[in-house]
Length: 416
Ligand code: EPZ
Image (cartoon, protein in one colour):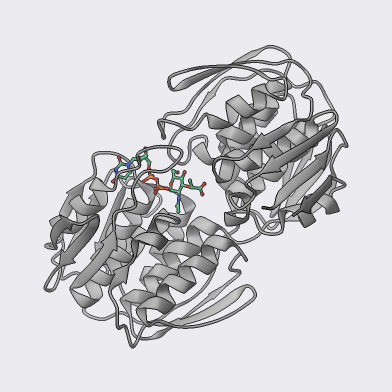
């Protein structure tokens, strides 16, 4: 079992380059199922989830050539239309093959993802959208069985904002006959990149980045070439690493507007931030002020940065109140941070954090990807040694995190 061991309280200093966004790489790989033409993706992050998704596609008969950060995918010989349980349960994003397979082949068998540590995470909206496009959806044996002739454009009103739900429906609509309108759509930058790629493939997509996305489908789609946008959650995590260690960190190769909600809150917390082109500089060697915040769909404060922000608030002077409005169980890191001396009271969807100014190292356990990032940040800020167990979570979403933090002066190592 691998663990990460950190000697804390050294201010991080220097530059860190941000990798391609995991949550854009996954839908773009799914999009290759919409065509028999070759699709080329650059700036892929080298992550466990990207590898798992490529394995899933290979299992369906997709030809995959991947070298480091780029991949060429060709779905011209699809044999299986199945995403099996043992893969989907480990990576829920696999459910994004459902829309493309149903649209391209008229058939798909995808395991229901089941629950996960941070919440129930149903996919009812994905199914509602596909059914609206004319797919026949049957749930049996823990699997979704979808069947369809040519899908037909439709007007879809989503009951709530869902990122992968919006993407699944957009991809299916790209091969549907006629126009589809998705109301209450997710507005994430990764949705915008998918819309650009579907446009390159021959669908006509308008309104991506707003709450209404319109897709005019095409009978057949071309391949595409795309370079994955920078990972805004990774960027935010490294900015917070600089803030919690009182350091001086610059993240490079980013889109500052993608992390606007975070940088705004960091400024409110007393951090000194400067943006210049694709770089954001943070100077954190100053008193940390308590701030309140709530998570929200983009462009609001990202739920994937909530756990990391809680570490900063644990070190602040004063009391902060944070609300997690996206997932119903995303405070599991609080218990582990309390073991490091944090004073956090969880009350339903709210957490009250009484800043203590310091944390002390401990042995802790990661429960999900972003919780493990927050425990690593806490270890970097704490006095003494911290050991983070179950590091397989962290390797799903952060490329070379130990190397990148070490290069910033972090005293961190991976031990088996
Ligand atoms: C995406 O998950 C991201 N994953 C998550 O990042 C991110 O936390 C989440 O969006 C919210 O921003 C990927 O893109 C691979 P949702 P997704 O559908 O699409 C409920 C990470 O750390 N809901 O937007 O699965 C759902 O339960 C991961 O990289 C329904 O009720 O999230 C949740 O409470 C973690 N029915 C809320 O909506 C549905 O049909 C938002 O979920 C769909 C969702």
